[in-house]
Image 1: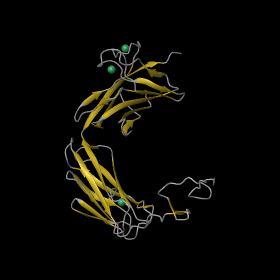
Image 2 (image 1 turned 120 degrees about the horizontal axis):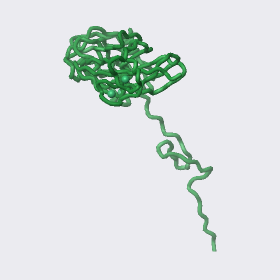
Image 3 (image 1 turned 120 degrees about the vertical axis):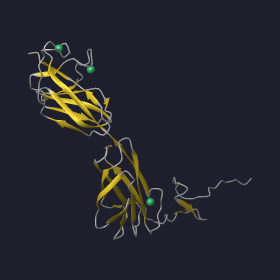
Image 4 (image 1 turned 180 degrees about the horizontal axis):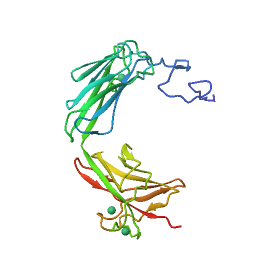
Length: 291
Ligand SMILES: [Ca+2]
Ligand SMILES: [Ca+2]
Ligand SMILES: [Ca+2]
């Protein structure tokens, strides 16, 4: 009886392949499929400053155009639409993509092809907020090229800019002589801090002072967002923070020690909300370090 022999359709060493990458001829020899045609792919991003603080305050919005495709992009055109509520008073751009504002639309036209994998110098709009606090406004950008693109879903971008009001953050710094965490008559004001800052924990922006007088500080233009107060003391100085939040919020200290090194002692308040036109009081009680 003749022996039956199984034969494999493919000869030669077995290789792991992905179906899409290779094709097989009748002889079973693998060939790479032709690569997809290289195309341009322009894209735009918009970025903006943190929340703007109300009418008359300046802000900037920046557009970045890049070609993430494998072919140059011809005849680049970028349009940025400025929403009502913002007045445009300046545009900064490069000679490769110069911009012309007309009413609320800025049009930028490429003067040369944008090379594959290249990014244009960013276009920055200088603006003034005209809308009242509480307004949200959308900036829109769109970029086009006459070159064929592999993806057009990334040719537009929108960025919402929030206009918020400002409020006041103030407080007293005092020597908590009896160490009970309460500010009482006869306990004197202190100016002996390295700095006091008001910081938005979401974006890290804020403002600060290094000198105060009569144990009193005040920031009257704090954005109406979440904030904290951060107090820094000289680590080799005579003071440290008293126990915070021990009683009546009107007279206790609101700063907790968060870190100490040889050179600085840092204390933070809890987060609080500043409202437009509102006043928040954050007091800072200090005690003499025990010897
Ligand atoms: Ca694209
Ligand atoms: Ca006290
Ligand atoms: Ca308190």
